[in-house]
Length: 164
Length: 284
Image (cartoon, rainbow over all chains, first blue to last red; front, side, top):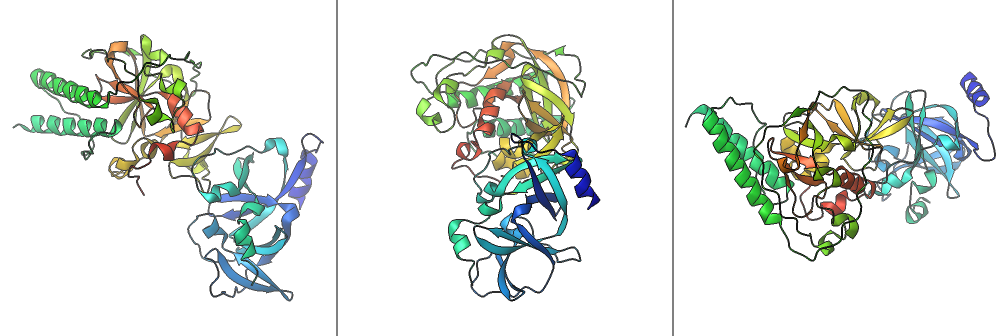
């Protein structure tokens, strides 16, 4: 938490250059960020029940205090190689497109504060759908943070298919 | 046939395949990485003559006649090279190639790739007179680039490259650079995707990047060689743009491709890789 405080102290928001908070997580060697306002909670890995006939990017469902939550295979969605579940594996419960879903990540790191002006666009190359999930990148502490637009992680039809 | 003659013949084959592939002609298989061969004078002369004949033939095949189009004023970005010292330029001794007859490429063929005003520019402005050129290698491929079009040469720290999901394989990722990021291109995959497996057969140690102009784009390469001053006639200039508008011509003395950096940048910035390679086999 001291990290958060020091980051907040360093970064001052202004109307022209608002400061946004991002929850960072790891997938492989890269660090990703998602808007903190969309994160509801972070869970330790728990058994995920497979759903027959579900799309390939859906790992299955979990029971979250009586609610059924669909968990997305984030690695597959990002076109990354699969990886084993470890002690650090987490399910991040997020809200996007008026739905609550879980995304499986290798680990969750911290909450960081970034000015809007610090966010850089990425080159518009290739035709892959998944490239649209990237909202921008930001250099921070000698590390490049890849900011993900959760709303674009699935298209309209895919969001519609998540209700089991 | 002596071993030297055999080696030179293999080198010629490799070069012919390389140049042919560059110009999008007959699909020839690229030979093994080039070897340095000590050759006697008559053999060298014979080989260079053969190389020239081969290049002329290949270039002649790419000539397409069309109505002339007025060329727009070309831009000449300022050069700023700092971190890696480039050797002093030395004069090139090469057989002067006959100046290519400049004929206009068919605009409609290039409509998907370059806008007409850019497609009309067959010989870049910097190529109209003497210019300095840097040679670099990507595995077995030697490429040349005009120094005036470079933004710098940098050591590549591979562990500092951040790859972005959803991007094409030729885009290696982002590399921090002076507070921003360079966008690193896997040069071999971009330049010759159909020959990528052969170019990388012995592995590629990408240790350097060459920044294109003042853009964030940078080409990854294995070695940076010497810089030399070339005359206009040292180059066999393209006579049409074909599928590779980034190829300005061939440095005859070194038998390597000379990059048209402005067009290269244009293709990168306009996401034209896929258009450019439509219908061509691309490495997995």
